[in-house]
Image (cartoon, rainbow, N blue to C red; front, side, top):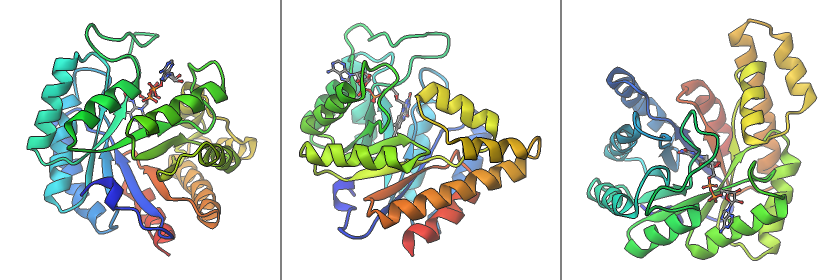
Amino acid sequence: MHIRQLFQPGRPLFSIELFPPKTPKGVENLKNRLLQIRDFSPEYVSVTYGAAGGTRHNTLEVCSTIKKLGMVAMAHLTCVAHSRGEIDSLLSELKAAGIENIMALRGDPPSGESAFQPPPDGFRYAVELIRAIGKSDSFGIGAAGYPEGHVEAPSYQVNLGHQIEKVRAGAELLVSQFFLENSHFLRWRDDLRAAGVTVPIEAGILPALSAQQITQFCTMCGVAIPPILLADLEKCGEDKEAAAACGLEFALRQIEDLLREGVDGIHLYALNRLEPIAAVAPLVRA
Ligand code: FAD
């Protein structure tokens, strides 16, 4: 099913993002966990695409399992290290596997490289990938959005323009970068709507696992951390379970507030963990 068929006005979507494990054993474990994830009836499950090498083929394998289990799969695809010809081959592979939705991204530079380098005969921006996917007329297309702007963009407004461009090019869904202050998401959603964007806009939620982890993610992605969250996480010290519970509690409060604001959907960055999925699903479905 294409993502455009999943949205029903007044019923927020619940979607889950997973990453492909590196090892065959990890992939098998995740496949087994998908059976449990199915019980929470997400509208779709998306699987990220590695910066280069390693896990890339596992994205397709995990997506195929999601589909076999009767759920809607969305495969992420990036411009990193792919020529246009390779992108065409990958699209054919995804189509042959029955994958109907693609999250089209530029991608982050592979580890060790500080800046994104467009590959020879490849794409520089996600918008170009979106146009290429659109030509095949076979996939529902999602794109990434940034409530606090993108780390490389000269300003929030410039980046907003680039997100609008992705929708005009054919993206049928925007999924936000994670954020920890709902006011950023709500302002961004309002700005997109004011600019005439009508596609669904999902709120990306990442439950923090520890003070160190969330600080690292926020620095990397240019996301502000509320001091109260950081202080609560720091109080947990080395107690990993307490910190994860604290991060999840904060995320649940964010979601309750977002649902009251009538968001189109909650996209959970689950980091392959079942616990946040089990906690968030009933909240979105209530
Ligand atoms: P773009 O939309 O191309 O934007 C990249 C930068 O270029 C921005 O600063 C933008 O303002 C600028 N820009 C865009 N268009 C133009 C233009 N026409 N002219 C000039 N400047 C322009 N990364 C992965 O490697 N794998 C994943 O699976 C993955 N999944 C993600 C899922 C979501 C929901 C999100 C929010 C991010 C994900 N990322 C993933 C991270 C993403 O690849 C990075 O944030 C990356 O730096 C930007 O990707 P993009 O698709 O937003 O790029």
